[in-house]
Image (cartoon, rainbow over all chains, first blue to last red; front, side):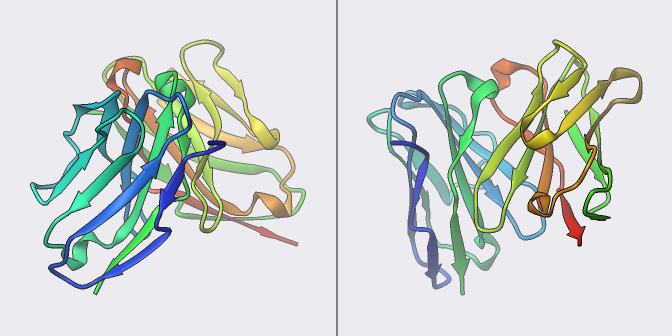
Length: 113
Length: 114
């Protein structure tokens, strides 16, 4: 596609529920990144995929967070047993050339009530 | 570990005035440095990047930034502000391209007064 697509754009869920956030990268981009942006903060790194494998998941805050990219294209960020502190904008980016060429999506705003 | 400090969470300038947004970084190795802009309800858009070539980097929309190693700074400037420049600006650093992740500052909200 022309850009990085993230769905849904907004998600409201109840505390304790499970959510999935989807990222559709630019066609042909092998690298995919997830970041989390809390209110009033800069984005924080969560996980980076090169192809199908997670090359760096050091930013995932705990084992309730998990991400997959089974075919090396679309990625899903999964959050179990959501907590109010998980409320944030979740940003996805993709790249063909690493840091020199990140393209970010518009994000998914997650609100846990 | 690398870190970024953006001085001033809010900056307000008049239309046509100089824009200066400050960024200082901490890195143990030569850094890669970036400025991103975020308009309301949109993703981050790359303004410019420094990757160890020229120290004065020109970006989109008339913005530029100068890498000063002695001051560990990478301040963003624009000679003449336009109303459309109102947005949130983020400075980011990465130690090496292989690391593949960015560390962002807290952001600076730029307001343009008519």
